[in-house]
Length: 429
Image 1 (cartoon, rainbow, N blue to C red):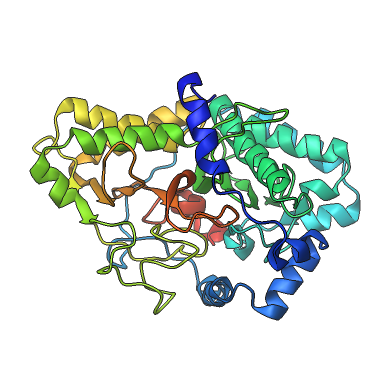
Image 2 (cartoon, rainbow, N blue to C red):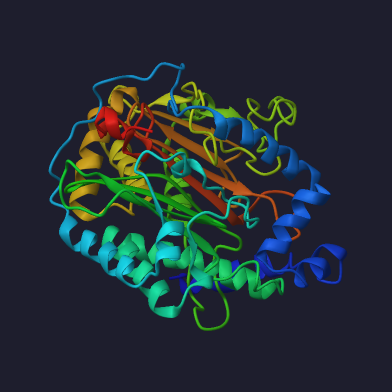
């Protein structure tokens, strides 16, 4: 929930940038459903910068899955098959309950092989580029509720509330810009991979994707991998209506800034990759496959279709020779918020895994770091890559990044995404 002392300030910040709904962009979209909206985008290449990016995404999607790495080489031996104490039977039962409510046509649309490329089909824009699976807003209410129960049973309670927050903020944005058929709490696609099972020998999982929320969840018996994840919000609060007081992604921002401000001046200089969020020295808008800035992704590197991106380490190391114990604990507190979707036991094990690699963990920052400055930061190690980015407006009118539009991404590098590293050869992507 939004803190009382910051609610008015946060509300005024984004409401100062409400768009002009009489422009062609909004009047045209208001007449369209989600499929007409996507077709209009593809036929008119509008906006052109996003259309060009989607063409680059097509090339990336066609590549075989390898993984995010620092140098193009997947490091082996980082991840193990383990019993995480997950109540997988309850999760499998929720999936079976969902399947029991579907007719044969719906089952065919929902289900994919556990090795299917469609695991990687997610994307963040509101434009439905790949209409796979079942769309929550198009199914009967009992089916939608069953999908939500499966999602809830798979995640921690805190993680489920965070996901609901992203979906509700998307709905709120749809109300603000008068595009409820394009953006609402159920404008998300859901796919099921493999056959629900409690057995480690029968891995399976699911994918949810749509505007500002994309979750890939893989199960191998009582073990779960939730990565990649993309969670965003524009704005990052709801200040009116049924869900007033909803807020997400503030904690990640506050803790990241606290960490950066805790560093010594010399450390801050080494951590700061670029002084400005859109720095003249930052290579941008040339090769969309490799450059580190474009109008959609902006500073983040590992969003949609970047499954094989090479991301060299930058910034300062988070070893005990560089950081105090208090600072290392703060770093782990930040990362716990990024992996909050994991159930408690799985999350504790993941944090222990992260802690083992602190000497190989890097923290990097883009932008200034005053209390009111927007910024980007990345925490990267052999076993996690977490990105936080303040964005300029997409539906709101701010042309410069602002704290009320946020993107966050979690990747598990070295073949950790989509559970690849713990799959048997016959089950790999």
